[in-house]
Length: 387
Image (cartoon, rainbow, N blue to C red):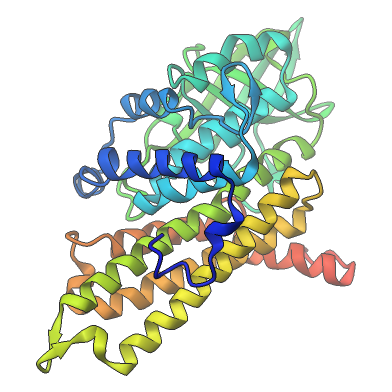
């Protein structure tokens, strides 16, 4: 963020290591991602495997995990990396966070030693890609209703069902799939070359186009007993993973907002309207001021929640506060910035409409705004109002 945008000196709250990691992620976003993103978004195609290896070489995959080749950095440093990647594109941050905070975290937190040894070093290096199969065609906000099931046949498990809107699904080497069993919901590490597993890519998206999104189909997928994640029992397993991913979004959404605001300020400075700079008009400055205040408030919230996470005291409803507020403000900032650019705001020459389109998905995934409102409402009243 430029010095002018850092109105309340948020940078003073960051350590030298955190600033260095932010710089590394920003450089990658500026040099590797931004020049190609208009084309990737237009075509709906990305070199995902190539990018994963590059991200892995920088230590940005599973960076907040320890061991197995992971960097083991703090929560704020991880959040700042998410912010810089999402300042380029939300789809790019989705690749990073699904790999590290969903697939890798599930294996790291709930997997066996054998599963960790087999997959985590390769995933941290970007040599193997993971996906996370929880959402189903008819069950998003209510994962307890999932129909995907796993049944015992001798010492093996056989999985049947489908998952929907799965980032990285068509390019994944390993899928963490959650299924109903007679013992409740359990997680399974499913190599994607297992017979009966397929992952058709979802086409015709108008959002997150620079991202691979897929359906997972499990048709009598037979797995050995060792494929089950031994430490995950019930919905607490996948929900714990989702909280990890939501945390990255709290920072990431502010990256998309910042990029929109920086673009709008630069455009307003150069654009001449009625013989003077658009930036010199009161209404324009009022818009910019309001957006900058919300951006700085969101960054403060993100850093504060990051410190709580580092201390081990971050509660789920606090994650909901961050996700609800920061994504809601980010999409409002994107829409307001578009008005400053006028008709040019819808052009692919500028990133604002791409960010706005992407943020529509970010608003929905990892818990819709309505779900987070109900999580906060329950914390306030003690009454669960989900039904």
